[in-house]
Length: 421
Image (tube, rainbow, N blue to C red; front, side, top):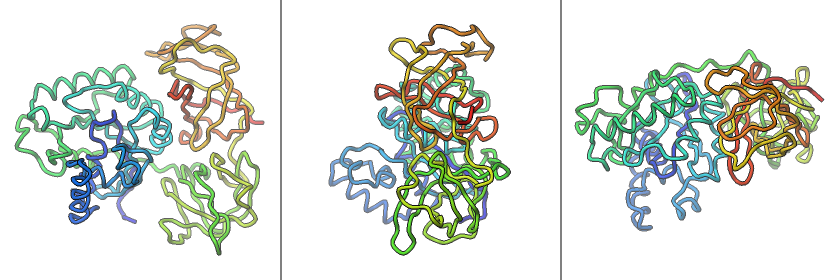
């Protein structure tokens, strides 16, 4: 572990705009991936007729992804800059992976949005920016990639910059503070070193922009909240739940409770990167063993917290949602799947309480009959089975969710208040 402050960085953007190549390039330029590994990937890429994919291969190290040439899982990779120790949360760009993106982006402090210079704003660019905004990502660095494809044209760069600027304004992202950098992830322009090919650009290069990100404030004063990603049985240890600590700290000897499964016990050991640690904090990915908790007692989507301040379980909850896309209209009684932290639960929208003006946030209509694409609203939601979720104002890390139906993300939102069961 590094003694520099830690940041989780999401790399988001449309499929084929070069996210994986950029990530591979960042890891290579910061010395996190040795030259010979890149060489090995280069040979393999050429054998498969995918020359130029070698940096992407660094990230897409699942065999299936290589065959398909797409990023599926959220791979965690680490690199250091002068200021920070970053973990990259590589967010898949494909439509069917948007929900990974949601559980992924909710884990990120800041994000790099990759937009290809030759393609500009694409449908998923829009969706990812929207999600990043809803899920509370702080600052956005926009990497205008593939500058080599447009012959390093300043006009192409300006055009994309304007398109993205307009998009940021639409979703009320602070467009004035966003940093734009013209890069070529493939050639390495403006990533670790200033490029002669873009002599017209005098702003920060990518690594400088990353160094200039604001330091995230670790939420250690909040109680422990750790959404469970998986539960393993490891011989000699027993049941080992795995997940990322969103808030608070966990130490051996703590008494914890898992909700909504409603079981608990004493933490025997906490492990990080296969090493036992006395204590872990926000942002740490841990595996831990709890005395008296068996593999079948808990499951993915449970949240672990202190026994004396357990995670809330919602009977109903009030939420603010923004409808991104829906073929018709949403009315009371609609039951899509809500994805919150690692949980996926069908929930019924019991009532639509207020329709909001998306630009100002003011109430536009009380108790509307329906909401449609582009609308923002306050709704009351009833989970069909127990769901642990927290008000966004108290624990923002467990207060955001995405709504999915028909294979796509319909809406995203945040929890305003929880009526506990």
